[in-house]
Amino acid sequence: MKGSVFAKESRIYEPVESVFAWHERPGAIERLSPPWDRIQLLSQSNGIAPGSEVRLKITPLRGLPMNWTARHTVYEKNRLFQDVQEKGPFARWVHTHSFTPDGGDACVMEDRIEYALPFHGLSGAVFGNTVRDRLHKIFTYRHHTIASDLAAHRKYGLLPMNILISGARGLIASTLIPFFTTGGHRVVRLVRTPPAPISDDIYFNPSRGVIDAEKLDNIDAVVHLAGENIGNSPWTGAKKKRILESRTRSTALLAETLAKMKNPPKLFACASAIGYYGNRGEEVLGENTGPGDDFISTVCKQWEASAAPAISAGIRTVFLRIGVVLTPAGGALQKLLPLFSAGLGGPIGTGNQYMSWIGIDDVADAVLHIAATPSIEGPVNLVSPEPAANRHFAKTLGRVLSRPALVKVPETVVKMVFGQMGRETVLSSTRVIPEKLAASGYEFRHPELTSALSHLLGKTK
Image 1 (spheres, one colour):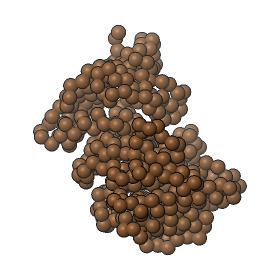
Image 2 (tube, helix red, strand yellow):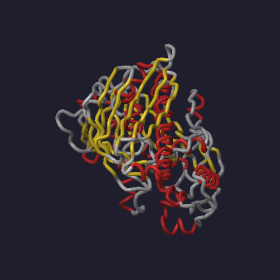
Image 3 (cartoon, rainbow, N blue to C red):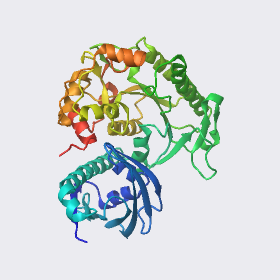
Image 4 (cartoon, rainbow, N blue to C red):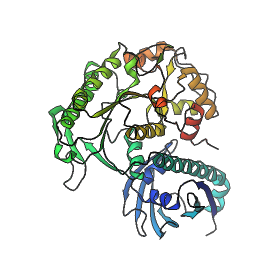
C-alpha cells in the first residue's frame, strides 16, 4: 500500500541509555500525549516489549472520540522499538522510535512514521497537509517534553523516591504522577475507594478519619492535592462547606498520621492556592504577604493551619500556593479555548485584574525542585515570574491562536452568572510573584506567557 512518511529528529543532551529507559517506564504514554487532545489510556501490557499492546481513547478538542490500538513489534534495547496500529483512523501506521549515540552524553532521537490514510488517493489529496501539520505539532511537543523532563531529573539527581500523592485523578496529579514515574520514582496513590489487595494504593476516608497507616512506612514524600473542585458548580452553602472540609479534614488526617510515625516522610507538600491573598488590585504579593478576607482566603488559611501536627513533629512542610494552572486539558484554559478559537474571546470585566498563572509542566518541575531543596519550607508561590493583567492574557491567547480577542465580557454578566465564585476568581486581582522559587534557584521552563501557551497549544515552531 502506497503511503507517506513523517520523521522528526532531535538531539537530546542525555546518554542514549537514559533516553531509552525513559520510554520504558510507566507514565511515558501520558507524558507524550499532547494536552490539547484528551487521551485516556484504556490498557497497556508489558511496556514496549514485543507483543505488548496499548489501547487508547482519543478525544480531539474539536472532534469525535476514537479508539486506537497499537502493538509493539520490534525491540532492540537502547537502539529502537516499533509499534504498529491494529485499530485506529489510519489504513496503515508503523511508528519506529530510534536512538543513536551522539557522543557520550547525548543522542539523536528520531520518530519515523510510515502511514496511509483510508481511501488514500482521495483522502491524501484532501487531508494530507492537515495530517502532516498535526504530526509535526504532536512530535514537536513530544520532543520538547522529553528533553525538558530528562534535563529536570538530571539537574536534581534525586535517588529514586517513594512518593504518596492524593487527588490522583485531578488536573495537577495527572501530570505530576507520570512526570515522577518516568523520572524513575515510584508513586503511590491515596484513594477513597478500598483498593484491591495486590494494589499499592493506600485507602483513606477523611470524613470518617480513616487511613491505612501501615502502608505509609516507606514513603519518602507526600504531595497532598485532594480537595473539592471549586469551579464546577455554584457556591451554595453546602458547596462552600464541602470546599472547606474536603481540604481541612484530609490535611489534618494526613498531618496527624504522619506526625505519629516512627519514620515519617521527609517532605509533606500540601496544596494551597494564591486565593490566600484575596483581591489585592495591583499590590505585588510575595510569600510574606498576609491573607485576604474573602471566602477563598479563609479556606486557604484554615487549610494550611490543618497541617500544624506535621510541622510540630519536625516534618518539612511546604504549602504550595498554586496559581492559575494553564493546560488545555482542564481548568481555566480549557474553558476559554472554544470561545477564543472561534474568535469570540476577549477581556473579562475591566481586564485590569491580575492573573497569576503557571504552566502545568512548571508545576511538576517546581514540586521536584522543592523535593530536592531541603531549605524550602512554609508557603511557596507556584506562579510564573510574569503575572498578566487579564486584558494582556486575552490578547496573548488570541495572538497564539491567530484569532481576534476583542469580545469583552461585562463584569455584571460574570457576577450575575457566577455570583461569589465569579467575584473571587475571574474578577479578583492577585499579582503574585514566586519569591522563594527564585531565591532558591528555580529556573522556569516557560516564564513568559507566549512561550507557555505556544507549547501547550502545539504552536511551537
